[in-house]
Length: 222
Figure 1 (tube, rainbow, N blue to C red):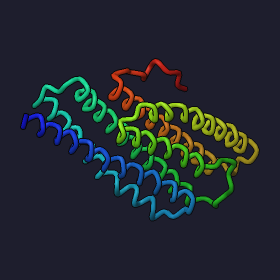
Figure 2 (tube, one colour; figure 1 turned 60 degrees about the vertical axis):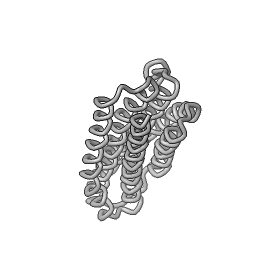
Figure 3 (cartoon, rainbow, N blue to C red; figure 1 turned 45 degrees about the vertical axis):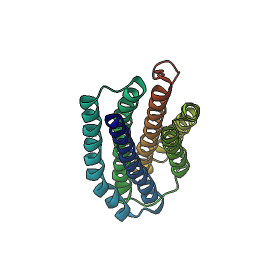
C-alpha cells in the first residue's frame, strides 16, 4: 500500500513538472508575439535565453517518466498517463521551438521599415495560444470533452493561416519591395499554425489517457 501511495505521489510530481514546462512554453509564445507587436528586439533575446531551460526540463520530465515505467508496473490508466506525459512534453518543447522561430523572424523584420501587412498575427497567435491553454486545462481536469473542443478549434487556425498565405502572396506580387517583411510574416503565421497543431496533439493525448482511445488518425485534420 505504501508503495502505491508513493507511486501516486510520483505521478503527481510528474504532472506538476509538466505544468511548469507548459507555463514556460506559453510564456515563450507570448513573448515572441509581444516582440512582433512592439518590434522590441530585447524581447526576442528573452525568448532565445529561455530555450535552454525548456530543453533541459523536457529531458528531466522524460527521465522521470521513464523511471516510473521502469520501477513500477502501472495500471492501464496510469500507463496511459505516463505515455501521454511523454508525448505532451515533446509537443510543449516544440511550442517553445516555434516561439524561437518567431523571434528569429521578428529580429529579421527589425532590419526593415515597420509596414502594415494584410495579416492579423496577434489574433492568430491569440487563437493558437488559446488552443494550447484549453488543451492543458483539459489535461489538468482529465476532461476529454474539453479536449475534443480543442480539435474543432484547429480548423479556424488553419483557415487564418491559409488566408494569410493568400494575402501576403498577393502583396509580394503587387509590392515586391515588401517581400522581406511579407515572407517573415508568412513564416510567423505558419509557425503559429504549427502551435495549433501541437495543441491538437496534446488534446488527442488527453483523450487517449482518459478514454483509452487513440484518435490521432481517426479524426479528419488538415
